[in-house]
Image (tube, rainbow, N blue to C red; front, side, top):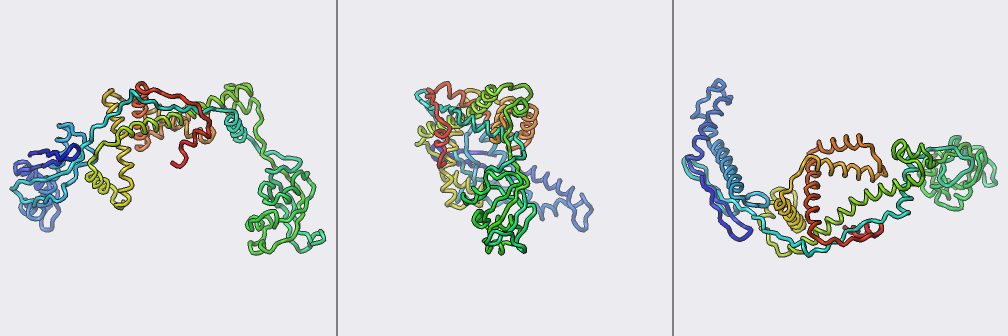
Length: 450
């Protein structure tokens, strides 16, 4: 068996693979014998089918199978032994006639390969910004409010406030203000002033004491017919025509009260006796936000490193035709237009990946299990932080990380991020970092429209 490489240019090459009779004859004969042992054919006992009959019926298919295996292995071995850095996979050369598989002959196959171009980035003169998000009092107050909301509870109130839910008896009134005998009557009606769209109607409810009554117009208070129908317990069609005033006698006023700033709340938020004063609580909140924002700052820093690298690699050439064919082959549902749109993005991703791979190889970067677990743990903490949970117990985090790494995609993503972290740490030592402090809103503007 013979493999010859023909370089067309710096990034395009073909591999000619020639398979001789001596390479495949013994393997094909063995495949026929193995087939005979397993074959079930009418008129023959299992394992007693004549080899000649099997060869006549299935010989060409078995020949193709064995030759394909040899070609595939030859390509893999040649690429590995010659340290070829290729992108994508070898593809059959378009226009090269596939050989007719006739036993006893030699067969030649041609494959196109996309050679990875050389990429090099000069980091020594790079000045890259690193943005630290200022954790101001507004952010802290919002986070404190979120915690107090999470550990709050519903209580009974004496007078109606905007966000309260009130329960009571609702009756329809006549034009003169008297109760309509055959009108709507709901014994356990419920409403909240917060959902009233008309401010004048809302004002009629606010401040009303328990056991007191107020008169309002549902059609004016609620513009949504479904809300009116639900409140009055009538059909939607009837709600469209309902214009009368109603009297509501308040029986219950339920209010959601934020958690009080006490030891019970501190313990629920951060663990027993971790925080003992309001000042310590605010400090703990600020510390958690700062830790959360470091991950965001690091993401932005990597984006800026990538942009710097890509700006230096605008003239790098790729085997575009071969790579587009490979992209199409692996994404059969994509149209030519979609491939044309996606290809530039793929090339940018390739460039950045090649830069990182080169740095990792040059610096002998190795990943340990602890590196991957640390990345997964940070990811888990960030996900919990999105829901305002800044102090998740270690045992819960450990279980979450374990489940995350059981998933193949989760483990691969964590490994890729861990490798990138090591590469970025190396780049950090080379570049000049321009540290800047920005507000939360200013930082988010960097990602608008992306």
